Length: 416
Image (cartoon, rainbow, N blue to C red; front, side, top):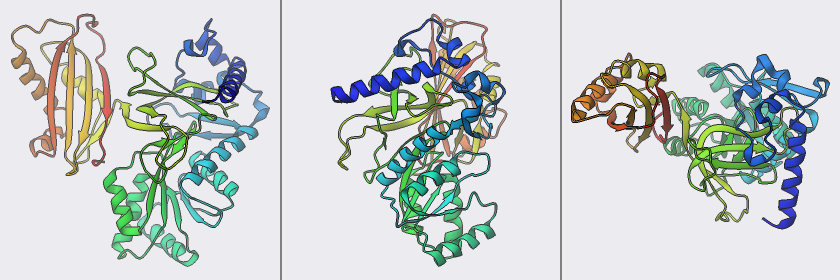
């Protein structure tokens, strides 16, 4: 980065920090910390709908839009925007869509949530700026609606669809049922990770090139180029950090992805963890663009789904492990899969109690407890849809008699 660009970034960051100090949330969070690198990470509480006024850095009459998240994994998030930042967000998303070669000649169907949710309106704003012809359709509720929309695709030569991988799977099903009648040039996905298998199926059925974008309700982050190896992002719009998820120190390798949005305004987004792991590739992409890329490596969460459609929750794991003769204080889970759709689940268990010579007995007990959790996990394990392994380690400084900490790294590409 040139000295001019570095100066620009410093000035933008300092302006954002000064604005953020108007918000009670940040004044409480930062305390006496004065340097960006010393600021504690923000949390989802920043957008908690019950305390949203504490997070506002502008007068409430300056807020032009309020959008929401569904609140399926936590308290509903309330996401306010000033008119100025909504325009800035739209311009950035427009630039990202241009990387996916969308232009003013395209006719685009948006199959994303509208109403109080931000995804559909945000995409629509960017497409208006591009000069596209836009068909804001929302998420369709049944097969008949999808079939009817396909007739609109064909009649109006709609060549681009913006949707989620989950809904793309439904489109795929209907198109296969109709004998692959509908052709689409490009599909832009967001909101979820898309597997290589689904990409291939969408290409085979629709003839579409799939571009995955990286976004959350709080910020649009980046998009793939034609190389499909990471998400390009503009460093003048976003500061992306990778930090060790245990020490919270910066790392150049795989770490927790933390973003600061330099276009945020109503609620400044400063050192906000996305809940994902990844690394930043600053080398020039083979596509020729200089924007760095986020290489996504998995999601840090407490719930995961494996082949066979079984969803595993943290409370079920805690319940099973609490029955062990040796107290478990921490459980790190890594989930991966192969091209055959088989899932591999590795449970790394940590205890504050000396293991002694009975490790193999304890491992057998733990294996039995995890295999026979309060779900049908044992069925998919025994049928070899899911392979499981367990490691047990002594952790000298771990605290006993605490709630078992569950950490999940989901690196699945094929199983959904």
